Length: 159
Image 1 (tube, helix red, strand yellow):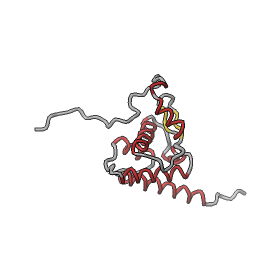
Image 2 (cartoon, one colour):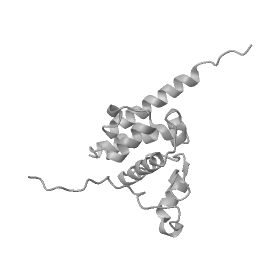
Image 3 (cartoon, one colour):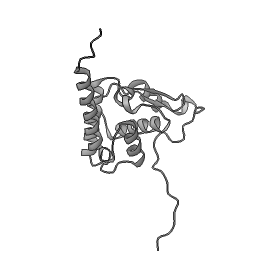
Image 4 (cartoon, rainbow, N blue to C red):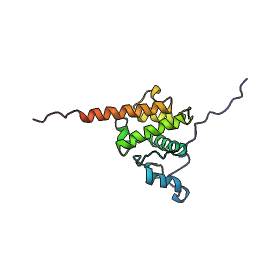
């Protein structure tokens, strides 16, 4: 017989940060938000991810996924504006998708349950869009392509 246990959520790097958490306790988080954007749980503000380049490592992509998760769990972002809510530029969108591919290629095969649900809710996604980090990257590219196509369509003529 299996011993009973209390189920737990997968922790994120944002767990335990409150509005009254002193800035001195969070130098790395605040520096990352300043340089890369993200969610500040002390203020409740979401700054779109920015300056995303090929210098990502496993730790940074995981922290950004935690940031996205904390923002969505706080009720921020819109399913219809996922790309503009969470990314400063189209290049940041592409670079983030590339970083997710690399994260997956490094052997990160298990998608954190909280990342999974946050992504589904934020990116107007189905389960198949979030079962792997590669699938998340593909969904982001799909949304970017849809946004580009929508931007190309001429507006309705005014009379």
